[in-house]
Image 1 (cartoon, one colour):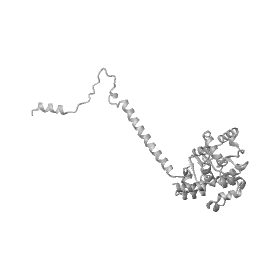
Image 2 (cartoon, rainbow, N blue to C red):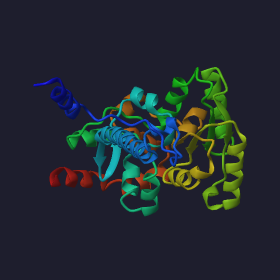
Image 3 (cartoon, rainbow, N blue to C red):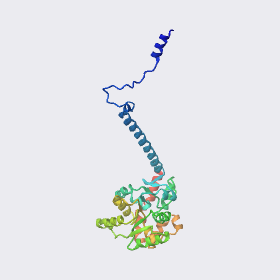
Image 4 (cartoon, rainbow, N blue to C red):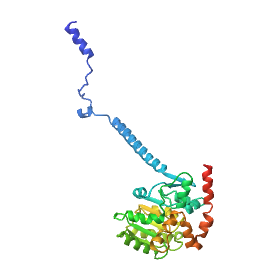
Length: 311
């Protein structure tokens, strides 16, 4: 093959060259000539953004699933199956309710209470009787974390955390203030920054509720503990929590304020562990509690038996 033929073959097999010649009619600058089209950049960004969001959604879904998986359901009420230390370490914000037998029975017939409970981020077991019921149903709960225990435990856990500041709402006149003084003296700092005992029936008085809300807003508190009994405290929290943006944690603590103030006696630990705290309280306050424990809550045993053998 002669040199001329070889030259032609080489030219025919060579890759096409990108022309760098700028036509007079073109308005594109040399730097723009090699750039990626804007539409492609937007499409790449859109795909990246979609992939990022999908990844985040999957992670959130996994976290939510893990949290749901750690719950035990009794009479259609989900209860967090969590230890005390796990709970205190996870509790950064949200609404905390403490279901017991009385709560579960009220939730069977009070739709407003059901809706309030639906706003809880944490539902921790308040009752040794519920612990026994859960075990009987084949789904044991790790720990009993009653409102009465949670109040002092939370304060002890955050003893050195200056960021935690509590507003107490509940008890008869002067009781919340005594609880505040007792807790602060034990903790060694002003962890409870303000306390208020509302009037009886305050929840039905919009003017008083607004005054309480303003009192909480003016305080430096970021934790609100309400101890006015169920279902009143849960309904009040659910109704007004959106008007308190400075509050990170809301808790319904029942009679804990009375106990910490020394206003009412707390059952001895042994009685509580045996699941007989309800009996101790009944004997302490028979006029107030006989209907709750002997009438309202009695069907609980039948409902648990029914749930056990229907499963």
